[in-house]
Amino acid sequence: GAATPVKVFDQATDGIVGPHYFLTRPNTNEVWLTLRTARANGKLIRINGDTRTIIPTPTATLETTSTPGDEPTEFAFSRDGARAYIGHHGNTITGSPANSSAFTIVDARTFTVAKTLQTAPGYATPAFVDFDWDLGRVYFTTKWSPALAVFDIETERVLRYIDLGGYGPAYGVYTTPDKRTLYLTLGPPAQGAVVAVDAKTLTVVANIVDPDLNQPRAVRFPHY
Image (cartoon, rainbow, N blue to C red; front, side, top):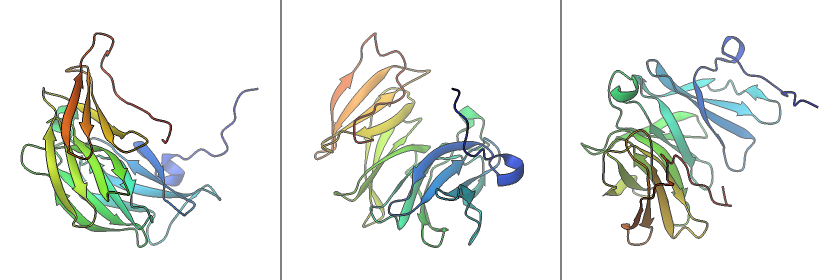
């Protein structure tokens, strides 16, 4: 028979507007969700996965930068679930009032913004995120550059920006199961290519351009 939703979250009851990206916080029953719209201040919201209800304390929603059109997008947690690292998609090209360059660190235990960092000039829109807990890194693409930014969790600094060539946009970054290679998709509307980066040397090792790559958006491996 037809599938029936167990629970439907909506704007009137639960304050869900512009839901974008889900992720489960490690070692908890919390499901985190970014709320992203082109004009309003972007927010995080948490759902109790057991009771299927919004977690109301210390607050039901958390603004990541309190900036209209910042558009929090993808994010990653530290291995222990104590910190969340949130990228932002806001850009005038997609209708936001200004280009976002914010990369926000959230204290997951207190559900408060611990630190807001800015990407370097020319590397706006740190939108899509992946991680390597063993190396203590968060990888995110600065979408419209396009480039890969490598963020060190311990020092809370960007180690390197790796330019990917072309106009963009970079739609994602994905690690192989052995964490040795990063694959990044350069998708619509500007181009269709997949770039491979060596995670050890942080250098581009392949730029895959093929007619069959028709505006790729995502790569997935078994560990996702």
